[in-house]
Image (cartoon, rainbow over all chains, first blue to last red; front, side):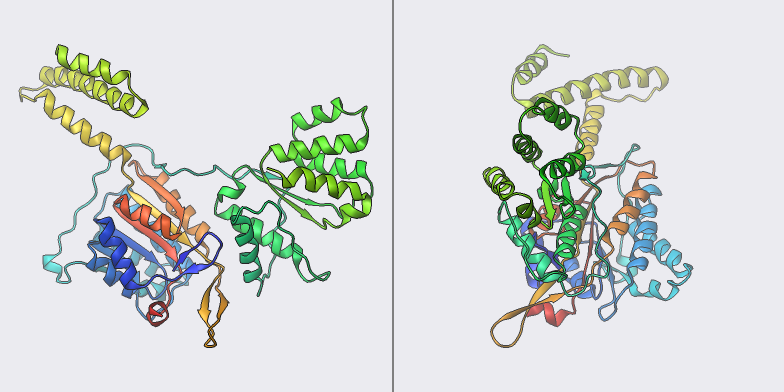
Length: 293
Length: 153
């Protein structure tokens, strides 16, 4: 099962998988399917040209810990020790069979090769050069987190669809997504789950960072400015506030909002309705500044 | 280095980035080959042509760009299933611990002496196709498996 950008699963049939592999004309040496019941998909991959497929027995589930342990020793043998895929598989299986609590899991892993007869199967090691391994795809080296991202809501049960709906709105390019509901229903939990989902996937939406603010304790405009200011903790913002200090507080607030907007981050405001109780103009200014690109 | 080659390199140097890179690689390969041949001839009687070294270096450069390991992870929040009334219901799925899995894989690669180029991407359909088309040695997929009959539906 693949994953769409809005967090929903995308089932992929064996026929489609084969079609993709045929079109791409792939010549995969090894495919490692770290997922339950993956033997059927392994057959498709073999038919489409993969030489080796590591998978889980057709009717069996596998523990996350077992997959983690198995893959680590498999890749260590394959890349660091330059062993053949078949040797690496045997080493990983042996390692798992002597791991406490995971002994029974080792038999769930199977290696399927294109030639089912062992004598016919030829297995070589990869051509690798000495040097430091490196990640080659574009990625964000750790999302910049501002104002200490709140912890993941635990337990988080039965709200996945709400998270998906928020993600769908964000992915459509909506600049403002509002989560409403009765007090205590879990609006904050959903917003935290959304933020954690995006952060874990180094999502493009949060490439410049995340600001998570709770404005519940702000009773006045200066307090609100202080909350925003301490959340962002940017030297530039401090200077900006100093410059406009002599002007009225609303002017300072506007400048702060403009500055936060310029950072191009995902801004999450918890208890946003409280902005209205401080001063109606605050929400007006807020929307005017943030709603326009 | 013959005049023709020099002219070719000079011409290439004035073109765009990609061509510039190629030209630099060609110069580097020829320079390295030159040095290697001189050193090799000094220490060994076995003849070795400069072209052979260039070929080896070209192969190595191609290897440098190759993705050896492509990791795809998919831990969706859930998936839609038909409810039998013509509508679809969203069925939540348990979250996978893909972060730890990836951390362990990269740890085992970083600890080794060999240079492994790897990519880690979310397992979206587009990323899947892109990863497969790059022809990596190894494709590692972390995700949920579904019993076959569900998938065919």
